[in-house]
Image 1 (tube, one colour):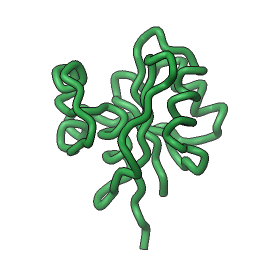
Image 2 (tube, helix red, strand yellow):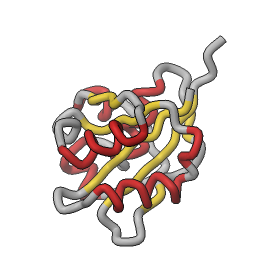
Image 3 (tube, helix red, strand yellow):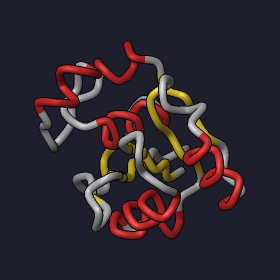
Image 4 (cartoon, one colour):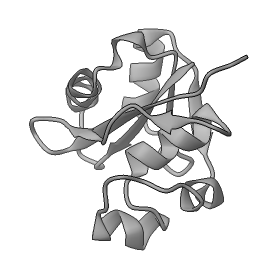
Length: 121
């Protein structure tokens, strides 16, 4: 299963999220994930509905336990991890998941996306 973790600023629109997901190579995404405090945002809800994908709201403690490739001081201070997109993807994909690459950023800099995959035996 491939999960796309999504991070975004408050002023991001759905085009920003689409662009970040496209930049991450998310064509085969089977689920979306973001921080629990962002999961009720209309923009991520709209993307999940448009793509007909489940959206996982990842609790803070699950984000904090993920080791990320990318390190952002702002995200570290807010979520206790280096990359919200990477941590959300890993947490939602489950134990044994691995990142398919570092986060990608939308052209406008308002959204990030990262893909994680877990092989299901």
